[in-house]
Image 1 (cartoon, rainbow, N blue to C red):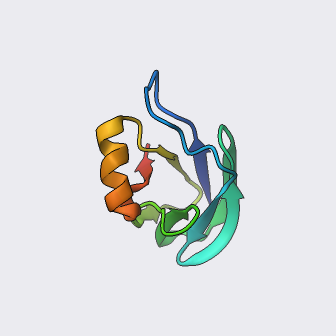
Image 2: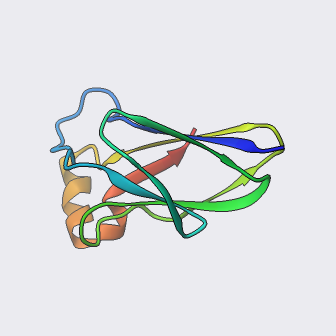
Image 3: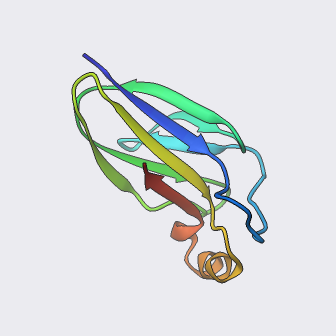
Amino acid sequence: MATTLQLERAMPGATMAVQDRHGSWAILLDGQEVGHIAPDEAFETQVAPGSHTLQLTSTGKRRSPVRTFSAADASTVEFRCHSQPVWPLMLMALALPGRWIALKQR
């Protein structure tokens, strides 16, 4: 049986950050593009049980770190993503574009 991967793109709480609201981000599952996610949207797909990697990419070199997750048979795996929520992290992400997108498993 397949496992459901759910991804939500939403900023956490009240934030003073400049949000990356430029279009959608590519979703890479096990290194292959499987879709896109726009601001304030959700994405869902089926994955085979087992170990997988997930990464999001934006324009240029902006991306999230690669996250590894295990998908149990007939379960749901949830992630939340957003651009960095506070100015110090945004400035860090300009120097380290692999940290531009925060990607966390719920």
